[in-house]
Length: 252
Ligand SMILES: NC(=O)c1ccc[n+]([C@@H]2O[C@H](COP(=O)([O-])OP(=O)(O)OC[C@H]3O[C@@H](n4cnc5c(N)ncnc54)[C@H](O)[C@@H]3O)[C@@H](O)[C@H]2O)c1
Image (cartoon, rainbow, N blue to C red; front, side, top):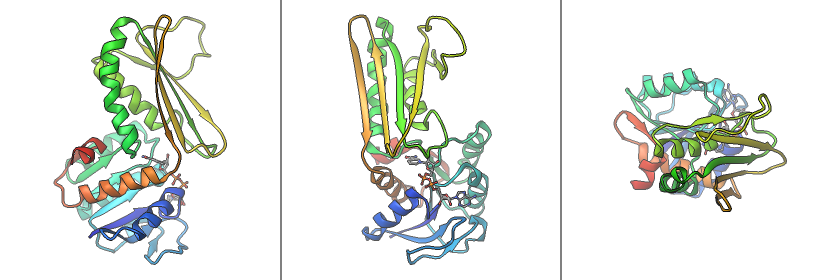
């Protein structure tokens, strides 16, 4: 049985994970953390993670960037592995995540779904075959109108995968309106659409002369991220300090 602290337990993802854990005999949420401490679930909820005095094997975090510093301090001080799923972290916060991973097991992924993590791997051979043949790479992502960060962390992770396969040769272009010039061959354009209750769509276009190849992932429900996070918690419990990603969970 993996005992989990749910950071951001009253948010959309916190509730999805609470429901999934209630149906899973191998995992239990033993405490939650949220500024809103009311809960329909049976576990205690603390307003700040620093106040949480419940023993656990892993922390799942779907909260807000303002929670990250306290989350990492708690994880390191109590030696509780942490799965950081909140997106939109600053460069300093990403560096703090890496620093924490030298002392405790940390898993960070912009997208916890099996499908996206498989796509991240599939893009590498596609980029190696198509980019040298002159194909331009563009990414479009779509999310609900409540999302705070843009482009999505997943869109960046997809771009990183292409870029890694091409030895880091690409720049990311987030805005074409501020200058009037043709696109550079060595850039990946990333555009964000926000509206309604779109759970998450990502399209990666390889655009050549007279042909376009499109990789598309559609999330129809937040449960795909919740299931991935729960599998990550089971995987990370008891692991030594280090930086892990969903690829490690999928490979087992
Ligand atoms: N990695 C992934 O696969 C993935 C998937 C979905 C969402 N996300 C990210 O997870 C985060 C949460 O998403 P969501 O849709 O559940 O958001 P949400 O706004 O519905 O939930 C966030 C929760 O965190 C709580 N919170 C905010 N500030 C707090 C603080 N200072 N202390 C304690 N609690 C605080 C809020 O009260 C809320 O209940 C976002 O950054 C989102 O982009 C990541």
